[in-house]
Length: 71
Image 1 (cartoon, one colour):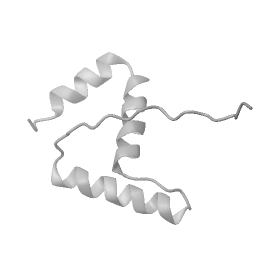
Image 2 (image 1 turned 180 degrees about the horizontal axis):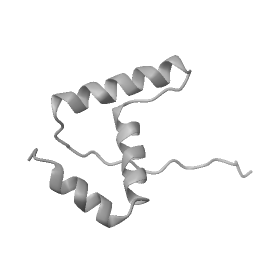
Image 3 (image 1 turned 180 degrees about the vertical axis):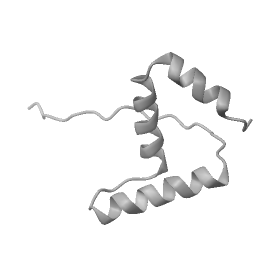
Image 4 (image 1 turned 120 degrees about the horizontal axis):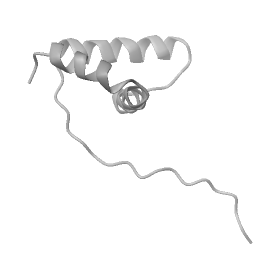
């Protein structure tokens, strides 16, 4: 008997370094979403941000990278 199961993509662990302000932004966004009944976490928000970046013009991304002084 076949079951109709959808498989979830396999997630991989990754370490990223954020400024303290970025940590606060992620937490505030998570709380705003929670108040609207949307469950989220930092990992989900980072994945959404990566997908959003993927849709952007590479020249815009380069400009933003040049403005970012954090290493």
